[in-house]
Length: 180
Image 1 (cartoon, rainbow, N blue to C red):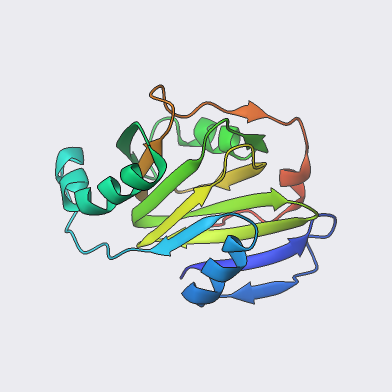
Image 2: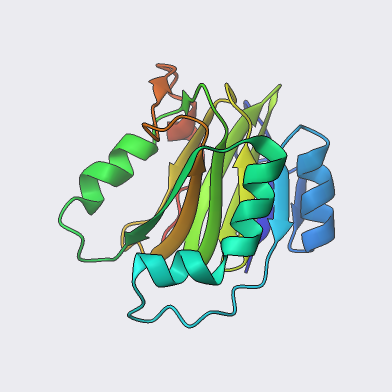
C-alpha cells in the first residue's frame, strides 16, 4: 500500500509522520514542491507491449505533456530475474539529483522514493496507480528492492532521458531499504 514516512535527516529511527492516506500524502508532498497523484491503472498490462501500455494512459500522459512540456516518455519494466537488477539497484540507491523532473507513474508493482528536502527525508512507497514527480535538483534515491517487480511510465524533459548527478553523500545508507 502507498505509504509516506517522514524522518529528520539525521535520525532514521525517529518517524515524524506515517500515512497511507492518498490526500494526506499529496498534501505533504505538495508542501515541499513534489507532485503526487493517484491515477486509475485499469488497463490489463499482463503481457502487454509498451505501446499498449502507453496507449492505455495516453490521455493522462498528454495532460502532463501539455502542463509541463515533457519531450519524451517510455515504459520501464523490472522483474526479479532481470540480469542487471543488483547493479541497477545499487546505482539508484545512491543519493543523486537530475537537471529535470523525475516523473514516474506506477502501472504495476512498487518502488521506494526517498527525497532529501531541507532537513527531512520523505520516504514514499509508490504502488500501482501512483504518479510522483520529483522536482529537478532535488536530492533523492530510489530502491526497487532485492526482488524488484514494477512497470512504470517515465516522462522526460530531456530527450536523452535519465541523467543523474550523484551527490557523494552517504545519507541513503542510513535509511531503511525496501525489503521485498
